[in-house]
Amino acid sequence: MSFDTLDRILNRVVTADAAAERVPGVVATVTRSSGDVYTGAAGVASVGDPTPMSADTVFAVFSCTKAFTATTVLQCVEEGLIDLDAPASEYVPEIGELEVLEGFAADGSQILRAPTTPITTRMLMLHTAGFSYSFFSPEYGRLLAETGQPDILSASRAALRSPLLFDPGTRWSYGTNIDWAGQVVESVRGERLSTVMDRRVFAPLGMADSGFVMSESMSARRAEVHQRVEDGSLVPTGLVLDQDAEVDMGGHGVYSTIPDYTKFLRMWLRDGEGEHGRVLTAETVRTASVNGLGDLKVGMLETSAPELSHDAEFFPGQSKSWAYSFMVNDETAPTGRSAGSLAWAGLANLYYWIDREADVAGMWGTQILPFADPASVGGFLDFETAVYDALA
Image (cartoon, rainbow, N blue to C red; front, side, top):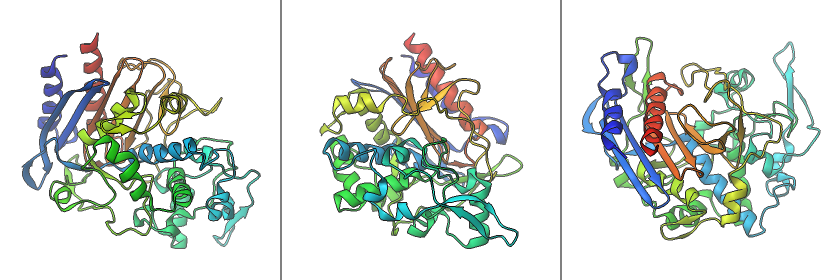
């Protein structure tokens, strides 16, 4: 594989003449089941600091956390601790108290009713339980604005107690499902999710630079999260996820390095085997890597908060499904990604894919809001395409 082409893509996105086409810094990796084949870094960790971006730079991975949490759920299933089709309220009673939001009355109060079906852990894993995010739901945005419900970045229990937008199991909607799945894990394990994840995911994978709480060393290497403003330029936000959180948010709370995360991607290529021990059985990996939605499909994520996300859809016009807990491209992607591959992303423009058929996975990491930043997405897709061109 030619590393020169990949290096040129990274360098291009950090040196582009137009501000809107430029990112401050990026780290990207490619791995196969046998080990890493590329690690590259370019640019700086912050527009306000000349410190170069490097392989050991620490990122807020946001929704890339979800796959870690899903893995801890699957481990519980393997041990018979969780029945995916039992009501999740058997493990976390608060889930059974949530109602469906049918609208708002003239006085602004919520119109609520009981759901027709109980939420199961399988629904949480598949994002069909009825939850969303405030930046992808005008209704949730209104709740935050008018009721004082805290935002999920507060990492509080109150932030999770949003009403459902539809009856469980009837639609796909991306949201706080995996945060609740993490609460299921905590219930059956009797430990915080961070403790479970450290021992059962990060340790066997050799992921020493990953966790909900940053070590002093990790904090010193943290990349700045930037906001792209109207003229296309980037400004530092100072955003740091709560390091003394009430709840370990299984949907977005982890910090990691891109090479560390790549060890996790490689585990999925290796049928569950980690650097220092097995994480999942081969059978679990196979069953967790296929569409679990049936006839439901993954569509566009329409923004309700443009400062946090653009409208976002991967491979528009192509069929997409969902596994535990990844998007599945049902058709061969324009980049060369095989049909049936797994992928997802993080809010600050981190993107990864796992192609088990071609035995290749990769990740692209930046720290920019809003999500689906054109410069970041364009660089990632060019990067992935170059990987498949080299493989061919």
